[in-house]
Length: 84
Image (cartoon, rainbow, N blue to C red):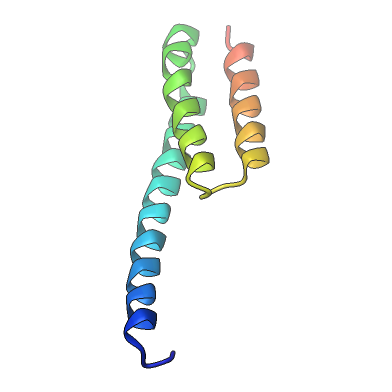
């Protein structure tokens, strides 16, 4: 690492961003896991928009690619739709 003020600041910023992105990503993955574990269709239907919103926010922040976000949303929508 270069010994410049700007470089040191950039390292600090990227560490903060990395921690924040990891937190949001992990939180969203846990929410998806909880949603897929729900067996009641009514409960899953109420939770689905919250999880979809979390996924959209990850894509908006460039934590995940927009196509991956779309793929995840599609998968959980199908899973919720299959519940009886």
